[in-house]
Image (cartoon, helix red, strand yellow):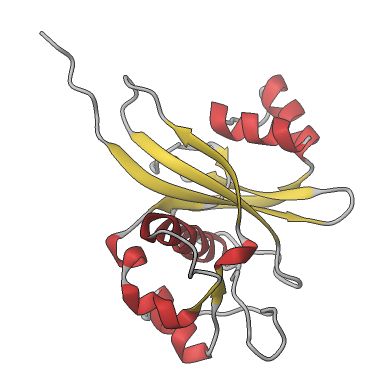
Length: 196
């Protein structure tokens, strides 16, 4: 009997960096979520709406990107906002977004539109691309992006998918993983090692 290969789900993750010494944002998944109780970078599954052409008027730097690449970058921004309340968007007047934004009952797209904000996809730099191997229960084809964290946005856990978030130096995150005080899956650990 041939084992069936589980299908890949497209996903995107955003590595937010800030300061000197360099710190990265880590979030801890809820015990019942994917990657239960592990520290990861904010992110999640690319949804069909992330590829919708309705996004085009709200995007900067998207004209050279393929539809799948554009959708992955939108998903990384959307998931980061949903999980941490950190909004990686730009105000056309100032060029940055500061402060806290909550759009109760509105989609990410509708909230951006109502606020007059844009996603500058050129600010998300491709970092690594991980594809989960055969044999794992859930397989993801994940694109990791890196960008500077918006000023004055420290983030807050959503209390649903995310139970904790913190800013940590990559080398400290690696050390905590190796001593067992912080649970990391291999891709997260490897990304932290690259940043150390």
